Image (cartoon, rainbow, N blue to C red; front, side):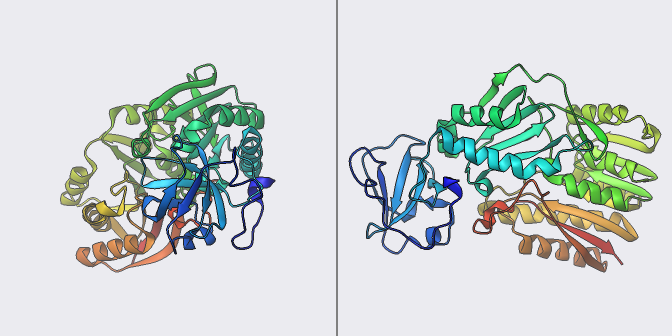
Length: 415
């Protein structure tokens, strides 16, 4: 397929690329082509020397080096610090309806092994990793929820929806383009039905467990699909008393119960999330409700209260919200991550397992490990890393785009 073609190094533009009727040219400043030569899909405003004319938000532009060497075809964003996002490094690629048909069909086909009788939900399109920057599509049974987070994705909304319908035969395509990142692209939030009927009640199955999904009001697109493999890990290790902090709709809680945990305490500050979590437990009649307690509270305060009461748990899951959306917030976020991990390590029984995560883009894996190590030191405990955790297979990371590895986690044993 044209968008997936491999190109060795820079090439001269096709014959008509700089002629009348072709795409506007975005010319880089001298020496700023290095990242594109390494196939990084973002072009920052500081790397741009000039742009032909006044292309609209999301318009396709040809990116050239200072000497005119053709580099990429990209979507332009006049207000974002990420001034353009690459659609293709192939000079023959045409960014049109068929481009999205091919790209989305390829992405969906790659996920088909992840959908079966025990799993009816997964991420179908994961932005840059599927050569579709700014495009997210999650499948929940017969419904597909999309996020269009960049100017280019927003401009090609109709083509993306048509391609998703063609690839999935979904009965509903619902948009949840209400993430804060759209503001940086100069875009307003958009939420609503794009095809079919309102999704209404949506139920999925993951690893044989049933979950209700609120695709219209839930966090992200309604569920944390990226934690699928990590929920399976908790299920496999479940034993004794389990604490699930920031439990949302109970994914890790149900996994622990299914794995044989003696009891599970689940804490979240959102009453609506806890209500859906209770419903999710009720959907799975084989799980004993008496073994699970749902507690509405501020997690930081509740962890301190549990510590003061001398509570102990064999497994603790920490899956907090994004504390650091960018590197500028890393220092403040580090303090918050250290606080909850320190408290968790104090609450962890000897030999117990801490399953701890950061989904903050401003905190990389090395910094996160350093934070957890500092928490162990301050808690005066000895702990070892027995596993490094990341997002599930339906959230692949493009080798040339390490920023895509937003979820990082550690499986830590208290010795």
